[in-house]
Image (cartoon, rainbow, N blue to C red; front, side):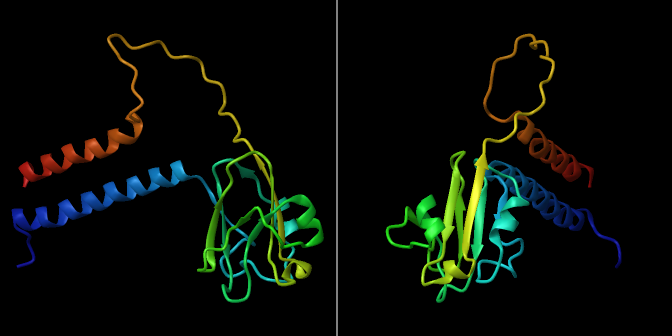
Amino acid sequence: MGLLTSSGRRLLVVPATWILVLLMMVVSIQNVLGLIHVVGGTRQEGWKPDRNYTQWSMNERFYVGEWLYFGFQRYMYNVLQVNHTAYENCISDNPIFNVTGGAGRDVFELKEPITYYFISAGGYCYHGMKLAVLVQNPPQPPAQAPSPPAKNSSPSNFGTTNMIVPIGLVFITSWLFNFW
């Protein structure tokens, strides 16, 4: 009664294999999307008054393609992208962009190597709800010696490295079906 039949083992192996494939795909997607910085450091800290966001941002490195996550009480605060003058003087009129989507869990993509400025309106900027983020281009990977071209190979932009493991798992799954 404690032994699994051949078909019972397949029922366990196939879902486990596909779960592994899906996890690898999620990791690959995370690498493509870039890092997400939680403003304030943790979701519990979040975007709220009486915090030193300048100190927090000075301890972080921000690169093009990364994201900022603002978590806040949506009925009390908001997130506005502003210029340097509006940031310095807590002016919320005519923001560059209203990051607030209404949920209080909003993200902003850092698209250019510039300094981005954010404030919260309603006087909260005067209570520390302002953030300056210096964004840089990503660092260049270390130089590697060029590898010799493979014979009879053609260039491909398909992402060979990301496909080897899932394809291998398909073959392993097929082999396990035949084994049991």
